[in-house]
Image 1 (cartoon, rainbow, N blue to C red):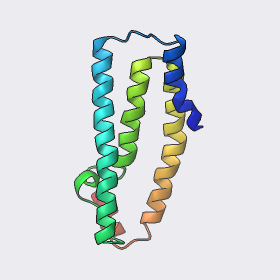
Image 2: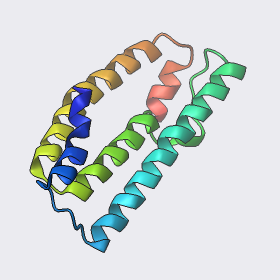
Image 3: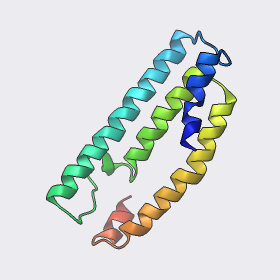
Length: 127
């Protein structure tokens, strides 16, 4: 399944996709990629250090203040940046499938795991 993430690069190199994206598409893709990388890496760093020094505590500050899944949001922005550059329906279809199956399943599994932790009720009502 992860091989499908190579689809945009393949489409660009093979000439299937437009090899001359407009400056507007490049800027939008860059902004999506930059903010996606920032969210994904920043939330991973926050989670690592928070759990290192306060284990078994639910994180509801920083990146996690507005969303339970800033990592996934960052990934979505990164993958969308690839789709924006390529501008092909095939890759948007792949992304829709991944988002609606893998990501949703992983988010629900994560919520089931978090329910076991102290403070879940407050965390759940806050989010």
